[in-house]
Length: 363
Ligand code: SF4
Image (cartoon, rainbow, N blue to C red; front, side, top):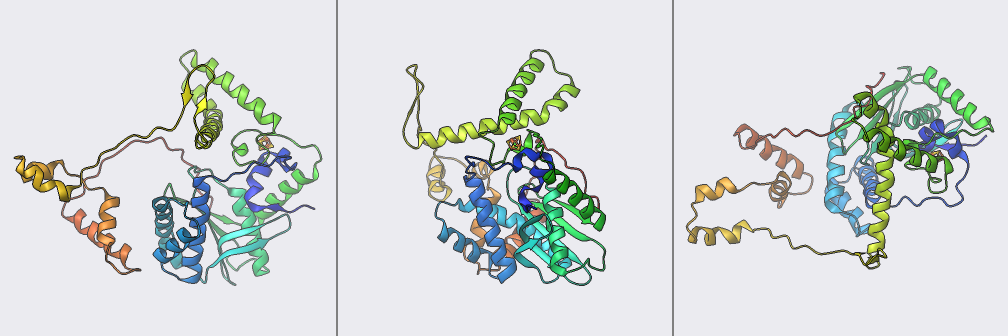
């Protein structure tokens, strides 16, 4: 019987066609994936080895100079925020731990097992908030194998943390969940009649460039969208098309990423006299320290100037933490931001963004 990687379980359960090995597997490396990999490494060093967050980030950047420091700092600080909330309920966490059960195997980001409890934490550092219930169930099955029995609590607590969204999904995986999951998985694996289910599952499928089912799905989706948009679509039609539109958007994102990579090699001829090329734009920023006396000499009043100034939280945080010893930086900036809040110096602006809310955990 084959053993499936836990990270591929959700796709396998959705599309058994993806069990067929890809002839030309897609290379998924991109900046967001690199940040995710580095972020996982940093958290493993901090939680597992107890080293300071800043040291772990420096270490990761020293190993890969192409990493985006600010993005890495962002995902790590959001994950650490979640970890501070979770850690009191997790005894002796093990990081990057290989787990294995009857049909699957993988590496759990954080796992903790003892006679009473079992907990698995999985960091998701990508931009989507898609849930990975099967993957986490796979880790839960592996945690039970690691302990050699079910913990006294009777369940494995799984927590999927979407660090870019500041959300967590907690479930309590019971023996019934595992039995249903393994039965379904066995059915998919054993049935030689593969079934294709193109859709969101295709996003990280290694076969996606060679899959006829996905190509048909994209063509059909484009046709359905344009037919629907030719009239005023109903709310029900918009909802029905949402996932198809999202898959098309991601597919187009892959096209634009390929264009960007190609532009690194030089301008691209569009064969009609036009070319696409990288162009540099000059963006001017005013350095307040150097500008202040010049502006006052020009007759501008300090009170008016202060009104026009806005500090970004990110820049301010950097300044506050500048000479603070490692390990105390976060505490220091939290304290200053809290004082600013009490002094009414922080304005909150409500922005509206589209957000897909996942079902609540079934704990
Ligand atoms: S690309 Fe999509 S439809 Fe095709 S095998 Fe992969 S998941 Fe299934």
